[in-house]
Length: 284
Length: 59
Image 1 (tube, helix red, strand yellow):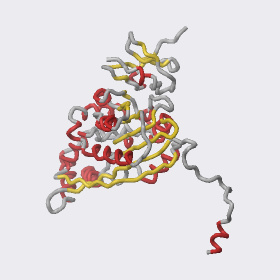
Image 2 (cartoon, rainbow over the protein chains, first blue to last red):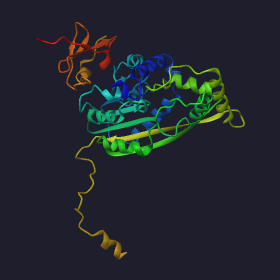
Image 3 (cartoon, each protein chain N blue to C red):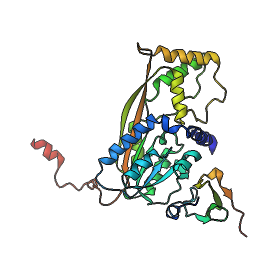
């Protein structure tokens, strides 16, 4: 099976373990996602009793939820993060929670590197009680264009491009995925974040610190050559603004969906209208 | 460290999606349906297929 997967599960767990010790100081991107999720959560009027923090990293989101009086179960694909948050180690697309366990599931910063995202979303929906809420945030399409261009420029030194950037999900595709996974009232939206970097190495350091470096199964296991690194650094520097910093873009994708319940607003049954639309249009 | 029984009740085997049974002596979570034992390491239930120990076939 693993030959047909996109992401290397073992590498993913390892990268997360390596990021764990110093994560709290490096988590600006996830902090942004947590803020976005809590914003969306605060606009919901109902209250929640038991939440799952899926992809819990150091447990920062769980702390916020507990402060709001919600009990939290934490889960992470990496052992070190699972241990820090007092949670369970598991893969998002092989979720080990019984159907109808939670009334809230939050996930910040992990669903972009899951092998079977439709499967993960379906399992998330099943783990929710009826009328339970799912809120997710992750890096989506349009992110890291400067990194992509710089790495390509580096690869061109030797004449062929290698897979270096993870596939990214479009907002529209994300909405479709939510609907396909059986969520009611699905919404997908995105938030643009521009980060200015003094150089490519600083960006690479940030990605490493977030456990977000390349885990593609098809990635090259040969190190970059000196000329390759030089060309990549130069391409990134050439894209800089007058003050010498290069603007890199991150598009954070937010997903919102409810597990279906009879109490929710339902579309009218097809053919149940009592007036003709054609007639209404003719009159005006 | 032991696993909170409240949340043990929520856990299922990621393969068979059936309930798990705690083997306190070996510190493992047993999936009778999948014939797998998942380890609990330093208080963390490791519910990864790759980490599970296959149980011997019962005669």
